[in-house]
Every structure is written in C-alpha cells, then in structure tokens.
Image (cartoon, rainbow, N blue to C red; front, side, top):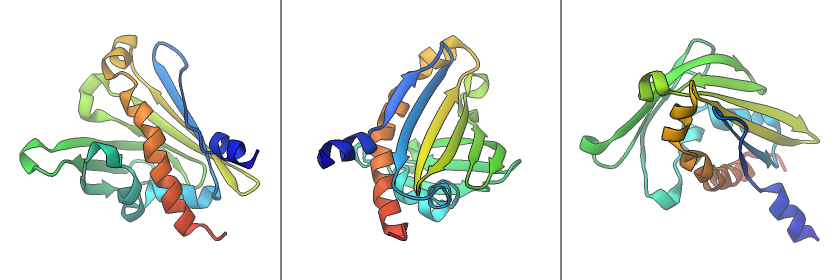
Length: 165
C-alpha cells in the first residue's frame, strides 16, 4: 500500500485541456516556499531543470524572477549549436505563482503559469502552457511537457536535500 501511495504521490500528469492549453500537475513533498525557491533561484533551478536523459547542459541561467523581470536560459555543450529560451515574467507572487512568456518562438510562443498550493506541508504544483492558437500548440507538441516527469523527479531529489524533514 505504501509503495502505491508513493508512486501516485510522485506521478506527473499531463493533460491537453483545450486546443490551446496543456496542463501538467505534480505534488511535491516540500512546503510551497521551498518549491518556489527551486523555481526562482538560478543556482537551484540549474540543478534540476534540464532532463539528464537528454544529455543537455544548461550553459547559462539568467533569471530576474519578479513581475517585469526577464529570463534567458541557454542549453547545449557546443556554443555553435546552443539553444536559447527567453522571455519576461508577467506576474510573480512569492510562494504562490509565476507567470512568464516564452518568446523564442516569436508570436507562436506560449504563456506559462506555475502555481504552488501548499497542503499539509506538501505542494501541489500546476503548470499551464497557453498557446496563442491551436496551430502553435500543434507545432510545439507536448514533448516538453512529457519530459517534465523526469525533470520533476530531479526536482524531488533537490527538494529532499532542502526540505526541513
């Protein structure tokens, strides 16, 4: 019974909510304050964001996590083939919500909203990606959201080291 509860606890769900929106949920065994820190402090974010199975390196991580701030993430070992992801933070409420734009795709970029809801010392995280059109979502696919299961597992590992229990 305990093993089943653990697997359900750490399960990442990915749902296509509409023609334009994909929603990913996961519960973390840490308070919202720590989960928010892992999303908002570059030195922590770098430790878990890139899926290990893809062999990607997060070369640089510039994040000014505040309403109106900007971010720029650069992936790849070869500077000639590096991939950059960038945008701005539209709304940041500490320990509750982060909303940002994904501007690397131009007008087809999504807006990502991550919410942190604490329940009995655990945090329900809900990540929503809203695309401007059905075609933009179709072109993006759900591959990045599917990889969040692995990425969130890495976040679990980081949070276990930060967590007070």
